[in-house]
Image (cartoon, rainbow, N blue to C red; front, side):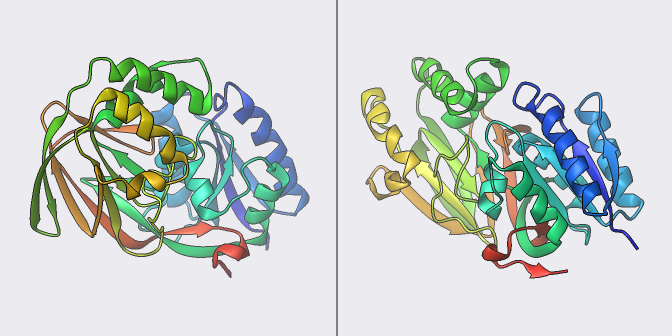
Amino acid sequence: MSREVALLVNPTAAHGRGARVGREVAHRLRAAHLAVRELVGRDARESQDLAQDAVDKGMDALVVVGGDGMVHLALQAVGGTDVPLGVVPAGSGNDFARALGIPLRDVDAAAAVVINNRSRQVDLGRTGDQWFGGVVAAGFDARVNDRANRMTWPRGRLRYELAMLVELGVFQPIPYRLELDGDTWETSGMLVTIGNIPTYGGGMKVTPHAQVDDGLLDVMVVKPLSKARFLQLFPRVYTGSHVRVPVVEVRRAVSVRVDAPGITAYADGERLGPLPQTFQAVPGALRALAPATTGATAS
């Protein structure tokens, strides 16, 4: 009996690349004798409804074609279930796919991960009734995220960097109150990130030692520093070496509560809502289709 997969496509991902990649993936999966149910929502709400319906109907897998925003949407349907999630990267960031070891620029290779049907249990984060797979932005980076999401040009990493420069001109350090597994940590900082995976923003290694299957969240705080020093430090985020600088502190916890005035949190590039919020690591909450080299096992 053929495996039945729901293929959820974001046709607007990467300025229309998602639609083309979706067609390629559907053809590739059918050629491998999978039964494919193609899903294309008119907006995020309809896409999420389609994803949830596919999971409720017992599809053998939910496969998304798009970026981290599309992954975030799909997680709301598959998180905490036995339905595996496949990802074919077609967005501007693709950080969750990167963390799973899925090829980012080879559609055939990414589709082959779905066809091979190898899966691994990975962690998700949760706040309230929302799942997230990547990194929570809760400071300067959240404000940059907000601005970058409103921009249509340029693409990818350059868009984030431009938004950062604009926000930096008006930004002031923020007073934070954090509770990590019940221990209080009060500090002033430029930003706080909470990582289930190492990267966000298209490969910035903001929490470079975060692991998607260790049951913990990595909390990174950048303490107050001058704007000139911030710009000097920023390039190091692409190698992860910023965590060795004294103004940067990283801690780990299962449960992280964050409170700060005037900050809206983002995760996977999607708006979660204003602080305070509590973020919880949920071990093994997702069954993800992944290459064998990342520790996946045949299903």
